[in-house]
Length: 189
Image (cartoon, rainbow, N blue to C red):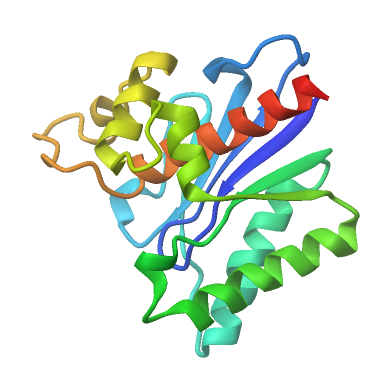
């Protein structure tokens, strides 16, 4: 079984791809990919986490194209993907850019024949933590406990990590739970 969970955005997209036997969902069966503007994060972290720099762009449409092409390269071969829906309160001032960016990815997935499920952010938060209004730190705490992966040690090995959980750690945790949510739904079918 090869499925993916996508926390798609303009500034910190993250993808979790599950390659497993379909019997259980585990961190060790997942590969994580994310884009970043932070040079020190554009590298390999452990065996299954890969950060890359955003490509240069001269126009917003070119930006959407490079992000979608990056995602499609990772998602080709997936049986199904799940994307977190829009967080309406957070996107009011950039809703059109976010919609155009996400729409391009959905179109490319459609062209490849990869089924897409859209899941509201509140549903993912409730799935991960039991609370639909959980903040990023709470989602990350559940991710860290469940996966037994301390990303703060990986990403900040020689320094004190920031007090607040930010990108790309929060994005990786979100993509993990989006993928796990899809896995869970597929088990119920």
